[in-house]
Length: 333
Image (cartoon, rainbow, N blue to C red; front, side, top):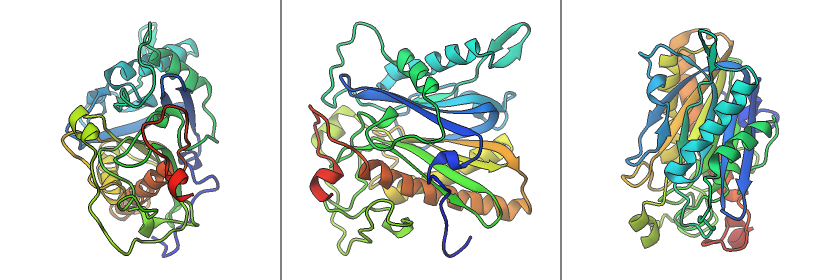
């Protein structure tokens, strides 16, 4: 890789050509959903490293499974209730004529993952599960440009010390490939070194994209609030995407490598109380050159861009009434 990595034009996962991201949130409930979609199906894989995941249709993403491409990927709040966001997306895609053809039927393939945001200060006494609606709204909102911070699946997210949020970043590689990350940060741990302004992801920052504060000079242990430990109110879920031409097996490896970004951007990560999960998506627009080298650099880029996206999620979080935690900007902005 170049010694001076360059992000794409938007510094978003949608710098991977053909991808769009949509967000929808309910400010009263303090929750939301995020959808990654393309005009045509794309190859996908997944890797789970947290001890408390919540997922839909992830088994079919195994490298030994028959269906290798998906129509969309969904990240949602709401714990198990949030899995219904994928249903809203699937219904809307079917109405658009999208889906895996089985006889005269179309079955949209929409894997999803959820985070726990049920005790974040929002009103969860809904009469009807809102996530199917939020999923459909997020799909309808899908564009190349989208907001970061307290939006979509990150609308109600928290970390050990600050509000979490939705983050994204991208990088262009010398091989001609682009790699992007999208992440909803709701971690047991912290994205910052203690309660200070410095992000664990600082060594990988490009163009002061999350404040340019640099690397911390002291490394105090991060305090984990009892509420986070006792309630298992956690989980960071994300997607890495590339325009490289990858198989489902290679996508699985890309998702696995990207978890290094969680470890670089969050302290601690992959705990028994987190459901940490990463999807990988490949549009296949740009062939591999020398596969062993290209896939190595793609994995390295995925980890680095994920670490940057985590910091951007917390950096861009915004305050709202009823918050249980301050934003990074309230304390350090």
